[in-house]
Length: 214
Image (tube, rainbow, N blue to C red):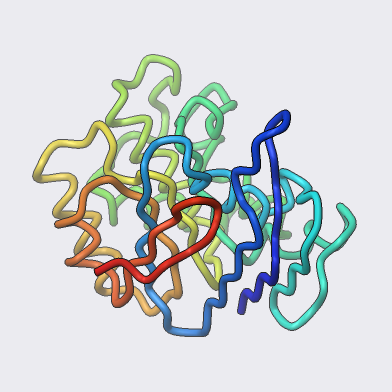
């Protein structure tokens, strides 16, 4: 599904990614760890075409991805959860935010509303449809952000710190959702227990390249 070869990216004069290789096959459930500033979020933004690498090859769903138009196709197929919920939510109400993706993918208003209701229910957010987004708590925003991703019914997920700011009960709910799904995913998290319960492989970014974590 994803194949990166010799990817390099630097901030100013320092390489964050330095010859990084990564392959993600269907069914992979990858946990991605590493210290702050090691390049975890940068890597995921490169996969989504939000940051251009200095060099390297990016192949996603069997096609080389180079130009912006190459990445537009995959953004409906890979659900990307930003680290900061405020970067993901931009509509006045929860209903509008969660329906935005399905509507832009050609769903009818009736079908989009059904998807919103079902997705919110799966996250125990029943009745949130008319809530004002900016008035939500940090944890609620996190869950609504996840709902916007799941509502697009993607082929794959990339989730950046999906349990950040969530209580134990809600974290358990997300673990259940991930374990019950049949999706391939990459999870960035500092919570090793969460990764051990949801992934089948944990990788670590160090010195700009990826190692299999022990």
